[in-house]
Image (cartoon, rainbow, N blue to C red; front, side):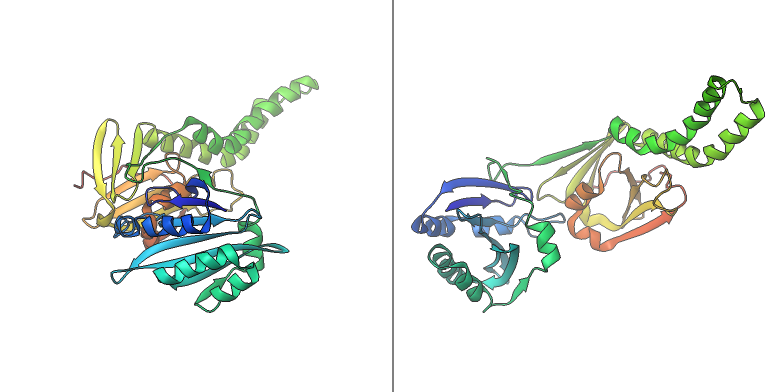
Amino acid sequence: MELRLKYSNYDSYEFETLGQKGLNSAIEIFNSYPWIEETNKLKKVKEQISYPTIKLIKDNKEYVEINGFEKDGLILYNITLRYKSVIWRSLIALRFNTNEIIDFIRDFYNKKTKHVIGQLKTKRFIEGSFFIDLFSYNSGDKDKIVVIDKDQSRYYEYKFKLSKAISKFWFSSIFLLMPIGFFIYSYTINKPMDLGTFLFISLMLGAFGIPGLILTINHTNHSKNQKLYFQKNNNKFVVIDNGDKNIYDKDSVELLEKYTVNASSRAPWSFFEFWEIKFKNGETLNISDMVIGEMDFMKHTGILILKKDKKKVFLPMIKTTTANTLQ
């Protein structure tokens, strides 16, 4: 069966493939994998962690992922099994030691899936619900095959994108352009619209379009010269704003507040959001989602989301940041 590896500096779906391997090779690779070194890299890291993993994939696409973690000075393992039962189902078994994992690998190579499931259920386990499995495990192979040195530093850059600003503003722009469309149409049917009617319609529809215009200008002005840099397995991150480089530490963060619109989700300006990072010394840093989206932000802040608060306001305007360099 195929054997894939994941190291701590890989992203969630990144794996290195070693090709087809027999049982003895798989056990040898498991024993030689640097479990201690890789789990040590994850200590006190505040981000979405990629646990050291060995993945075994059968020809019928059933697979197991063996994830290593450190607990009280020992390396223990969790197992995730994907198997076919009408649809693809999942089973997670917890806290195996090294000898138990080697025995399990032998069973996975030599025994039927029903036997393997029975063995996993002798441990503490979590069985996926039908609907979660339906959407999570039935959409094909999500793995991204890469060749990356496990000791290589991984950097991620985020910056303002004009396309993102346009996509957030387009719905509001419809309301701003509609009066002009009505005005032009009135001439095509030989019933020219008078100025008073045009201004009235512009005022009525502008109430739906102007908030989006204000937020587009505000977020763009704040973000257009801002860049954000994260490094995998590193709690420091860098913000460059108008050429000024500041280095921050996730350990200094006290609270994350996400500002969103309190109007209905159907409001034309409801796409605008930003993050306010509050530090323990009272300083703040504001970052628009025109710079970094929520999924990427969550990925790089990790356990800090436990301290996340959500603020709903009519217009999520970004204020001038008060944060300075935090070494």
